[in-house]
Image 1 (tube, helix red, strand yellow):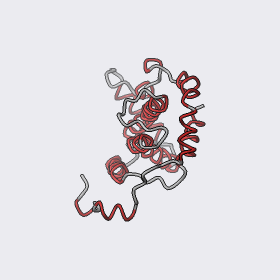
Image 2 (tube, rainbow, N blue to C red; image 1 turned 30 degrees about the horizontal axis):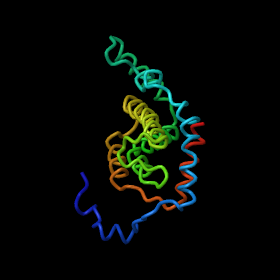
Image 3 (cartoon, one colour; image 1 turned 90 degrees about the vertical axis):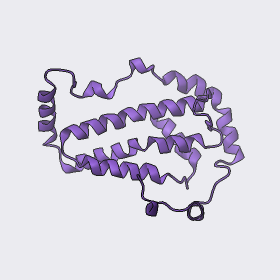
Length: 187
């Protein structure tokens, strides 16, 4: 829980990050609206049903199996050889993945892709929620793997994630460019 001294008043936050009433120029909003048909016919078919997707547990020791503790010992032995640089990268990636609520919230506020209810049937709303669910699996796998290795300070990582999500995010760059890059990464 954030301490009162860590929180800035709303007027202090407003001075640091003035409220943006329209996140995209009208031409860009029109562009996203014009791409809705394309998103529905091209992007949405790429989405797999949950039952056909890998899940984090598919790549980890099975806790209900008799050999669970042996599998964890084996995982730890393999992880003992990983250079610290690798672990730093995995932790950084996991922290980024764990901040998904912030990214989804930001995407849901953009003109042209807005999902005010969180359950919009628009192609952009469906894509954003499904993208978030996909990325969440990556964070879950990394979190469990790093925990099982015993090689990182999970409490410190958890605090970092809580600070990151609690701080929010200000989008000071072309948000349309950000979305397009994310879409390209998925195609």
